[in-house]
Length: 123
Image (cartoon, rainbow, N blue to C red; front, side, top):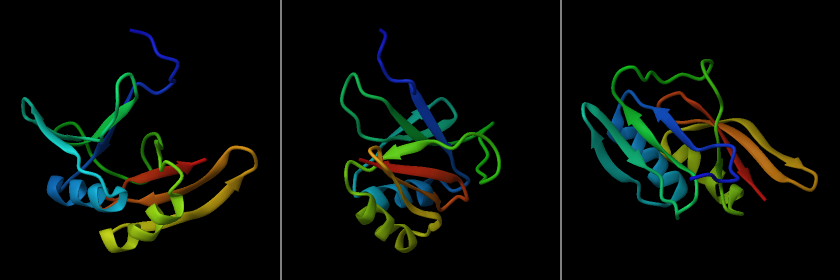
């Protein structure tokens, strides 16, 4: 099935799965669906078909880090300020503050509880 989305799926590495899942559940105020794919643990972000989603993952070969790999952007559904307000209390850090994108919303970068750099975007 083809979609108009450029991103099909994303995976955020974790070294401490429960801590990482707790971080994202607290920051986004949503419950992630925990699953096992063989030896790999994953917690899937909520989504509606045919939407795009992703998961926090734990297991080989995944390794968290802020200077490796691609920065993914998670949609904050118009709630960027509220999401950023929960980052520190959930064990993360804002490393690039909210920045306006004229006509395209705003974005920011955070470090999650595992040290991954993650982008946040909101219209």
